[in-house]
Image (cartoon, each protein chain N blue to C red):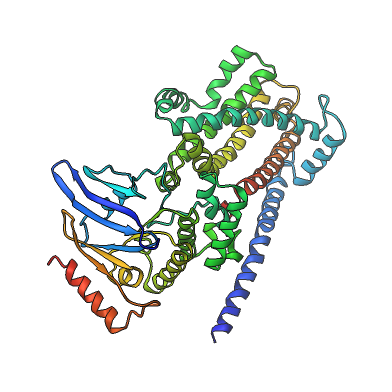
Length: 268
Length: 247
């Protein structure tokens, strides 16, 4: 009887597991169906998925402002990658220091807490006035946006570590700060730090568009802005779809790296 | 050799301001002995343990290991916590290796010890599992194995099975005895469970109410494996229960 019950339960689980793989495709299909329905009344204002797809293929074959669609995606991605890389290199050690050392928390941490609530968009005019409209200001804007979640999550991750783990380290005579940091604090905080990097990636993708909309000759933000200027809705939507695809690809890459770096954090 | 004194607690007293918690405690532990400490709730068992680990400094008196004042930097003191304390980011194998790495034991020796413990615990097939993938009892076995892995001069255990149900406790008690026999470590095990104390110990220290003194130092001369339903066992359990009664 018990074996029969277990068999039924396994069958149910398998059935549900298949469903969970099918459901995302169904919801995307539903979104496209709604898009079709919504766009059929006035395709000039709201182009159909077909029109947008055709436009994307055309943009992939013919250059606009010197780049194909893939080229524009590459330009935006490069800006995100450089800024995000800098934000990780500076933000993780800074956050760890703020979380670990009371002295750093009381000094740099306090300054950071004052700056943190200022929304990124408020920095844009200042960045343009200080650094112009070239590449430098864009990189700094994206860097600033990515830095905040990385620092916040890094120091939160450090502060959240159970004192029990530190007691275990001390019990085995981990006497130096570096030994505690390396063997306990950093690995324990890594999943939280990584959650910050994931947030920073989304922020960076958001800000790269804003930065490219202000002044740029290439990038997905430029494409969207150009479409708006010439009232080319299919160009605007092509840029939007491209940024969606880019975001999804970046998310897949980030998840892959996270699974490699924090294998213990996978759900069972 | 077997009767060599490993640990000597000499007139240990601890006060917190005017509050006297431990009052002039003295006893000796032979090398490789398994001692259980029992006492009424709130009598100062944890304070006693924290003095042994040197988390607290005694108000007077001293703790000696091999005739020298105990020093965690010099002596190899290990501790098994009550709470699940396996590092979640390390596999079973890496958790067992954790203390050895900090103590800079050479790689070959580390591997040898970890393999030995995995084999003793019957956890070889779980060596690459993370604590999240283990049951509570499996995780607790890893913690106990980790504590033994450094071949400690003194292993302190603070109610490591306090949160377990009776079946799991019996199982883990046998595991700890297996490791203790294999490694010959000197163990001080704190528990509020009298049955557990009599099942495990070669000697039971019964503490009095606060300020805690050693009320009795009771040898347990039952043969192993011990039968908790035997007449002698039940008699001893009743006796110890009577000794810690404060009502």
